[in-house]
Image (cartoon, rainbow, N blue to C red):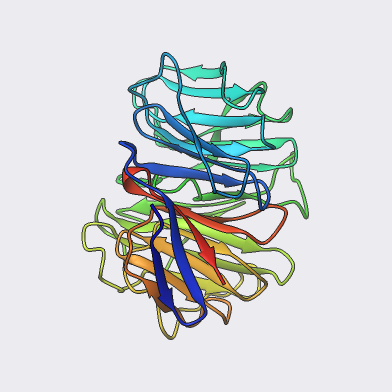
Amino acid sequence: MLIAYCSHAQTIQILTSGTKTSIRGLSVVNNSVLWASGSNGSIARSTDGGKTFNWITVKGYEQRDFRDVEAFDSNIAIIIAVAEPAIILKTKDGGNTWKKVFEDSTKGMFLDAMDFAGKYGVVVGDPIGGKGFMALTNDSGSHWSASQLHYTLDSGEAFFASSGTNIKLTTDSFENRYKYMAVSGGVQSSLLTNKKNKLSLVQGKESTGANSISINQKNRSIVIVGGDFKDDKDTTGNSVLSKDYGKTWLHPQTPPHGYRSCVAFIKDNQLITCGTSGVDISNDGGMNWTLISPESFHVCQKAKTGNAVFLAGKDGRIAKLNF
């Protein structure tokens, strides 16, 4: 089924929908290869730029929710199953078989997001004993070690598993192998790096705060989005941006048009953000946003190599942004 939503110079083309899965994980390797992960043990994989998809139900995990996926090529990918027991699986044959590479059955365990920089990877999870959970790898996800964030999260502060994009590894410097930026939400919303800084976003309820962070290391820009997912058309405090790598922060002049669960740089000053109330584009580094579609999506990603941009959401919906 192909449906196009047109606004200005961009169109959103629905490539596939109607599958009983809510997709929150999306990894775009290049203009041809993309993987998506969702509920009911579902994985989608395309090797022709979204023209066709191979849908996989991971055997033995039919009831699990895979909230994030990281793909390295058309054959190798990693997925995380969120709640007790928290599980990480890896495939090397295009999803035909999966190997369990990590498991943790600690009470309260809930994995939220994952990011990689080369062979280095990190998974972040909700607080255990007051401190955010982390799992680290230095061999492309074949082996993982459990760790913790350096600081205590406030009561009611955690991470949203809404799009797999609330933590980013940066490649300009690795301190103790890694340098990361993560964003939390809930009763308090923070930017977590080598220290914890409160974000100037709407917060105070379980449904509020930051959901996603995108970093452009080339021009030292950071954009963070979120809002209140229970009031998804409210624009109050749903985005902040920095043009000096987090030293100072600005609010957009024209914010995204509601709650947003994911944001991604398309070009140096062009971004896309999406949520349950629509999709926005910014052409000035996140200062002003234009609604290009009212369609609901959970996650949007640009190709690691190439310029293709894809989105995914409820009911197995996967779409492509056309310029």
